[in-house]
Amino acid sequence: MTTLTGRRPRWGRIGLIVYMVAAFVYLFTPVVLVIVFGFNDNRGRFNFTWVGFTWDHWRNVFFGETFGGVPGVFDALVSSLRLAFLSSLGATALGTFIALALVRYRFKGRSAANVALFLPMATPEVVMGSSLLALFIALRFPLGFPSLLVAHILFNISYVVVTVKARLQGFDRHLEEAAMDLYANEWETFRRVTLPMIMPGVFAAFLLGFALSFDDFIISNFVAGPTEVTFPLWIWGAAQRGIPPEVNVLGTLVFLTTVSLMLANILWQRRRA
Image (tube, rainbow, N blue to C red; front, side, top):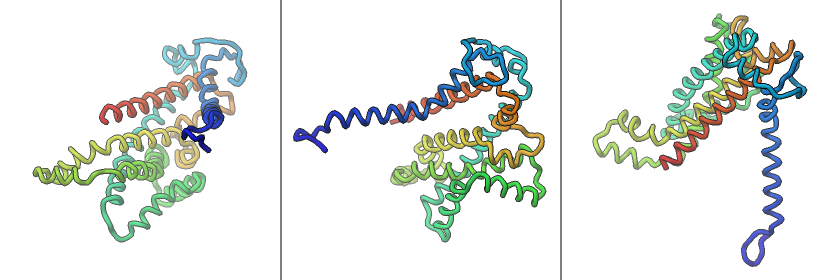
């Protein structure tokens, strides 16, 4: 409802602001707790109760041996970072070309391909993880980092295709035609015109795949094998004995790095615009 001057009533704007603030508080309260308890001076096994402020856990992460006497967490973090980077890189490369094919070309089975790409996002991770485990066992595929890499690329591709397709929907094809009129071949047109124009969407898809891969637990728990341990799997195992505060510090660093990359991407897009 609006007034005669075309302005909305004041209570409507206030209610919208209150709703927005409440939603953000609900979303970011767990993140704030993770950051705060990275400074908790706890003395027991569990880091659930605030005792006092200390920098010791941050010093242990950067200057302590094996993260302040926490064995295995560094190797698990490196394994997760390597897995997330390689899987998101592979999924981004494959998903970008799939999105280009689905948007640019009409071919038999195009609708079925769109439905098939939606299925990994709609399938519960428990079902997908158990199915991948059965497939790897049937093919005698070694369980470990290779199986994790294949599984993460598989479920990341769908998210990459959806993200890049959204960027391609508003792409002006006349720019490519103008490049070809200036004697550029298909590869040069793609490298110099198409790819730079859709690069914000491609980079956003890469970041999304990286976050999904780094955070995944259920599928990784099925296909990791007996030797490979990712960061979420290490936290799950450590939770039975008590999660050290250094894990909160590492989670804070990962969160801040991800937010920094997203802000850099936004600033880069605005600068290009």
